[in-house]
Image 1 (cartoon, one colour):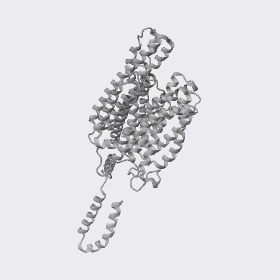
Image 2 (image 1 turned 90 degrees about the vertical axis):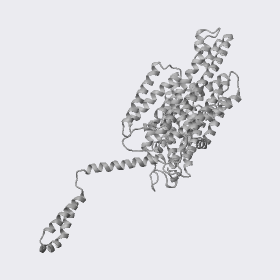
Image 3 (image 1 turned 90 degrees about the horizontal axis):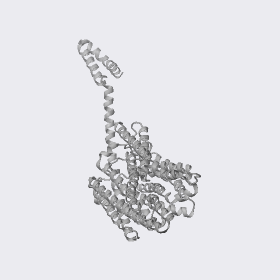
Image 4 (image 1 turned 180 degrees about the vertical axis):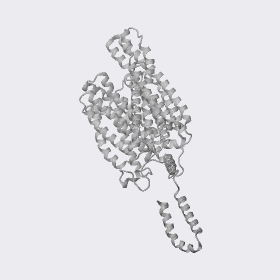
Length: 603
């Protein structure tokens, strides 16, 4: 998969001639393209978290059941993660800008449907359609970025800005959702997308360049469906584990097993195909495979921890949701700073040192947060969150840049989809793993509180919020004892979870030691990129194959030059055998004979 924009003087299809600077050759307008792509990413990142604070209002208005409420919250990331590979590779085939613009339109329509949903079923469908639109937008933004920034140094800066915007979106979502719900109705958290999409569609059509990857062979529809169904089953099972269901539970184990089988069959199918949907040879490159692993480890170690930290701030320290969001803002600002300076750091340190240092800094920050206790320590929290945000963004930025650099411009859609899928899987597995660690460390502390009945202790062991409800119901000394014990047990579980998370981060630092030591950049910006060199090699191979095929088709047929030479030699022999008296007459007829011989040879 390595096709890019039209070469030579021909402009990219669908891009106005005055905006040719957005083609792969680069130009001033590529930074405008980056702005459009960042706005696209911001919308998707915000929508992933904006609903969290609106859940109580949605519950009060639509009265969904427990299962319906779970699907309202989870169907968006579930569908989005499942379809990333499908739409990432489809963009390589039919055009990345085309898929991105379709994603814009679907995202806007689904937002309107969600905003005015009259029952839980319509809201679930709308959230699923939002997931489809998000899956179309996310890999397209990164693959177009790979195309318009062929120079690795500029691309590193662009990826840093791109990743900083993603961090901003994830943090702004709850704050924006809280503001909208407090001042309007819950549907406004979706309605805010419409004006941005109305602007993004024409602007994207005007500014963004079109490009495709290889179009050799048919698009593997069956492989795309297998990947989507397999990922859906695996992510669904992982999310059930994250919500407290055990792995041996039939509703959890069956989807995970079915998804694993489908993904194994998908990999075997891709290896056998001449034109695979996903170039699995990318995983044979250490820089690519290690980068993907680092993304999974970083999210696995931190996303579950982030949810636990939010519970700590609200349930243990008693902060409001808005105060919790403000307390987490230093983490976001530090992540933005890391993204903006990441390009120069990467050129100075190299991928190996930068990813390893990012993991080490994050592990140090996580261990420092073990100072959190039953009382508020703002200075410790702010300092820990700053180092945590800077280290996390340093790790993710460097891993994404190294991963994308290993892919050609044509395979950028598939590579971006793999990176985003690993992000989603790491996040889901992290919630399940760290949530299980937290529950295992929390339950013993509330299982045998003096004066509390066994049934109440069992209910309180589900979560800290459940323990508070039970303690309010009990009242008196028993209620106070249960509340105090549950808070202490939660803090103890938080410390254990932090230690496990730090261990995973240090494991990531060790894995990063296999990344390239230096950031290799062309000496001349005009030198072809790796993707262009790969494209040239493939085109040369295709030409050689066509020549061999042509030779095989023509094998066994007489060569025209040999036929003409034999006929001329025969004519000369006949002429030499004639009598001298006839030679003059023969000479007058020679031109006619040669003409006849030539006509015969050409026929």
